[in-house]
Length: 220
Ligand code: NAD
Image (cartoon, rainbow, N blue to C red; front, side, top):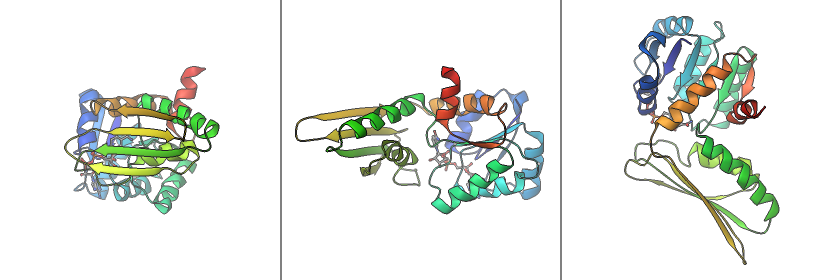
């Protein structure tokens, strides 16, 4: 699988590069990459994996539309309009968007959906902590978990130190409290998950996918 990385010089891009053999890595796109260079990387890639910014992935998707390469995108902080714009790409090629590539977060999403349904009178809160460089707030993962619960959450976001990612979800009622926490110990977990999704996405038809689609295919 020949891979092009969008956001190659960033924290996640560098982590991803470590997991890809040099012969499979066709090139990286970063803030100083020209349109012609982007076209060349897209055309040499079987798939693009993106950890960048909303502006960057939308620009790359526009340039890549003609070549219709599959894209796995982990970029967070997209507005609803930007998300809709990116989704248009899936009419041309397979596109998988995941706010968090750790399987643990996906398991929590299933569990909190059940909690929200069975504990309708409880208050749902999420406290998330990330490294001080993170641009978006609340995190894409906190918003993903809120969507998964189908119940609005009180979200507290802290940007401190070099924390890779921590989400503590709590359901509090008069009688009891359930707390479920997830802590990422490194960035490899996200990079590895994105690569696993990429291998799977290569065999899928054009369309929009998420991490749950990938995991469902593993359970079959
Ligand atoms: P970073 O700031 O370290 O890196 C950003 C990268 O994007 C850099 O390579 C930069 O050159 C590139 N870039 C910025 N503007 C660009 C432009 N206009 N054109 C082309 N490239 C441009 O960020 P990071 O910590 O690596 O995180 C990147 C994204 O991935 C963030 O949105 C973050 O929230 C997300 N993320 C997702 C997951 C997940 O599991 N889905 C995990 C970690 C981080």
